[in-house]
Image 1: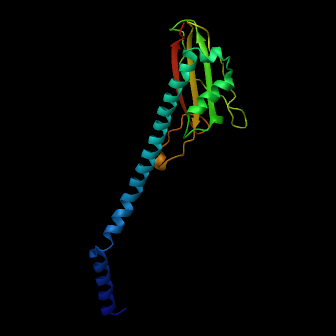
Image 2 (image 1 turned 90 degrees about the vertical axis):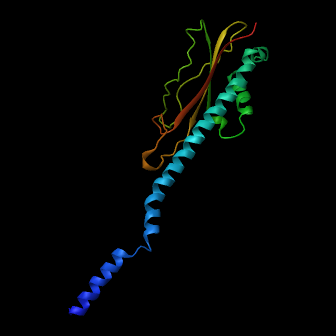
Length: 180
């Protein structure tokens, strides 16, 4: 190598180090990935909370059918009540995935509104069996409607799943005393 070639090589290195024309692209590349990860996490969180609130609203409206004695007077069974719940859901949910549990409690302190532990069959479907007892006049009734919300693993490990199958169980409940 000649002295001229060495000097031109060092000039190239110096020019590359001091050149700032690509700095914006590099800075954008460094900031874009975390920013997009944050946006995806926000959208997923929004959808879960929106679905939860929608389910709460539907359960409150559906529970009135039991509270006012309409379910009892029409002698509705579990499938008919589930269909009445589904008729109020217009977006986000598949009626096949809804789980409805209606129980009578003897006292307010014995009313169970906790989230049930789901067990799964080998094919991935829920193995739990749900009760349907709308009670009669003056009974304390607990209505629980559950749904397995599909959760997609977000970037940077953000995950809202609370079930072993990778989904999130969202549940809405209502406890009330039937009208006399």
